Structure formats: C-alpha cells, structure tokens
Length: 153
Image (cartoon, rainbow, N blue to C red; front, side, top):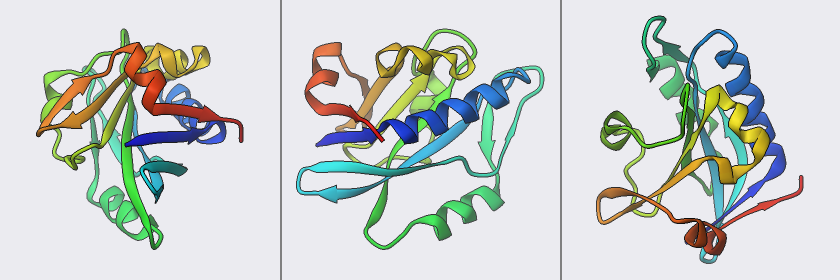
C-alpha cells in the first residue's frame, strides 16, 4: 500500500517534535489517513496527550491521549502511521517493535532523528518501517521511493 503525506502534516509533526525536544524529550504522534484505492492519503497529524521520561528516553500516551485519538478519528479515517522522535540516530528500538499501539498489517512507523530536527532534512533522514507478517521491517531507500510520497500542502 502506498502512503501519501502532505508537507503540512510533516511540518506540524516537526514543530511538535522540536518543541518537546527542546526540553530533552522524545515525542510521539499519529498520521491519520483515508484510503483511496491502494493508497493511504494522510489527512492530518495528531499528537495525543503523553508523558515522557526526564532521565531516559521514553514516551507513553496517557489514557486521556488514547481517548483523544478515539474521538479524533473521522468517519472513513484510519491510523496509517506512528511517527515519533529519538534523541539521536533514527532506528526502530526493541520497545518500538513491541509497542502495541499500532499493529495493523501494512501500518507505517516513522522514526525522526535528533528530537525532530531530522525532519528539516526531509523524510529521507528518518527510519521508515512497515508492518509485514506481524513484524516491523525497515524499508530500503528504493522501497521508500516506490511507496511513499510527500506532496505540497
């Protein structure tokens, strides 16, 4: 399945990650989308209520945040991707792999490096994973080019 993300959604995510990153915190958010045939078109970025670790890098969506996500989904929308920041290089940690928040086959997981600053260099600076056969698999750059597009706002 192809994923199409508007630059406005990525800019909103970058601004959020940089804001929480300025306090030395990771952040997490979701990309909501609508299916158009075999393509998921992102409609918006949502950063639900969350708590973060002060001495270590972790993020947990609170119960309030989970409810925010539930009521935010519009008819015909689905959660296409989780997008979150790491303090350093972009990679999928074992905690990311086991996160039960997004387990749908074909779902996307985007890891933004350097507390969100990496998005200033574009999506290619991120680690992009897709859920296949019950596991997260990092996509190669040629695969990303075939199945992910960024379009102007």
